Length: 124
Image 1: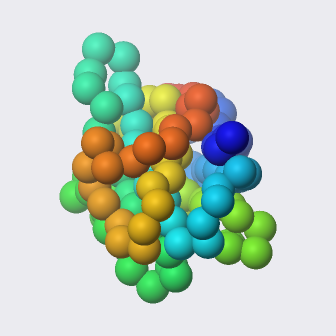
Image 2: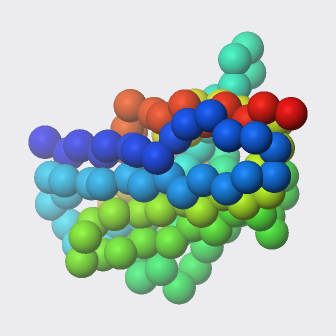
Image 3: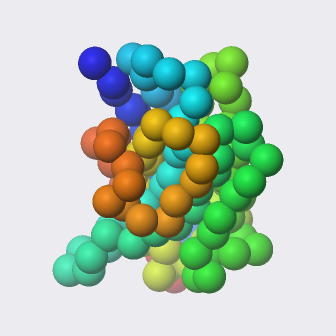
C-alpha cells in the first residue's frame, strides 16, 4: 500500500520561507516521478512543481518559478518543496503526488497516489 505523508506546513508571514516534505512508502518500483499541487479555498487544485525520477528534471508553475524549489532524496524516498518569498496568494492546502515512470508531469490526472495534504497559510 502506497502512502505519502506531507509535513512542514504552517502559518507564516509574507516574505517568509517554508520547506514541505513528503515521505513515500510502499512504492513497488524505483522509477517514479513526484509532484506538488495545491488547492486554495473555493478554487480548483493547481499544479505547483514536479520532479523526475533522477531529480535532473524539474517543472514549475509560472506563479512559483524563481521562488519555489522542488528536490528529492531517493535514499530517503522523500521529496521536498522549498518555498521562499511566500505571498498571501500561496495560501492553500499543499498535496504531494506520485506516479510510476520516470517523467515528470504537470497534470494531476497522471498521478496515481496522493498525500493527505498540509496547510500553508501566509499572512500579509
